Length: 118
Image (cartoon, rainbow, N blue to C red):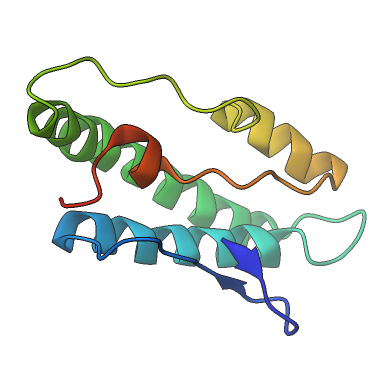
């Protein structure tokens, strides 16, 4: 996701995504927008928006763990998936960066898992 001049997240795709990937990319944009709204006012968190983000994030992670990652591994002939590239960070690391106002590095899960056709 990359910010635009308006501050809205956008996604740069380097492949034609399959239906599962496309669904998850759209959900990434939705979650990014919620997270940005939750912390839009410096020094304050919109707790209702953050709660919506958190619930959506947990659901999203579940979809990735139950659908995307197993399908990506099957698509790779059951070859184990590579770990994320350096700098992607864990969910905890990314949330810490958000709280501290540190920009997050780009991380394209679809590319590093090999799940682009899903």
